[in-house]
Length: 336
Image 1: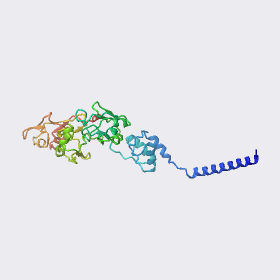
Image 2 (image 1 turned 135 degrees about the vertical axis):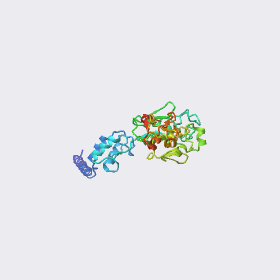
Image 3 (image 1 turned 180 degrees about the vertical axis):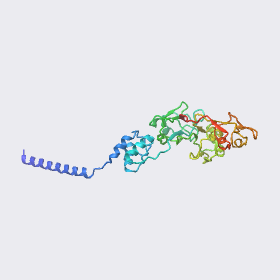
């Protein structure tokens, strides 16, 4: 064995290893990505749901974007205002309060109200079922009802009912939008949590076609648009579209709709009561769209309680402030 050759080989390998080590050490210094110390703090302030509602793949990516200034401090929909304030504090910014949103279902066509075009036998997955002729429901716009939204909800706010429609618990819903992204029929949407009334139909078919497949579908009759006192509804492609910025939640559209396509999230509506201040001017009678007020000119009028829907239009026009709204509005805990 030639020890000289062995020694040279060992020296050569050692030298090569040393050079590689030096190069790697220099590279690690030169190529080091400096991480903003605030990023870790922001990440710890986030709930860690990785729901993607912020528009980023997960909480890590969102935290990095916040510290770089490319994402808003209140971008975490899952965490809401509480997390937004924490993140804003870390970043030294003021947080802008935003209207909380809640998911609602824009379809009422359950097994009793809507027809199926065929009997579906397959996997319980909406995205797979829709590949087969658009799904089993005769209404091509309707909820398929196989529960994808329930499975993707990160907070367990959605449960499928016995009638195969999702029921959303608004106390749990954080408005993250995960269910909306998952739904292949786009029948889930976000509305301001403070709003009480919305249209629970997504069909753009003509009225006659809707009647053939669903008992509670919008037939584009236009009564809601005509009777809205604040012009918050307009007809677009055979479907009324609501401007929530204008809507006053009076509920008139709910009661004028012949197919009951609107949902009223109010637990209960107040009733109008006319007190002795009434001079019998008749303005309330003219304003009421449900003929719920009667009385002779110059005499105190009275409200027919069974007809009053509690919209409050009479209350607003009474010059004598002789009308009281008795009862209180509240939000239903579950929406469908």
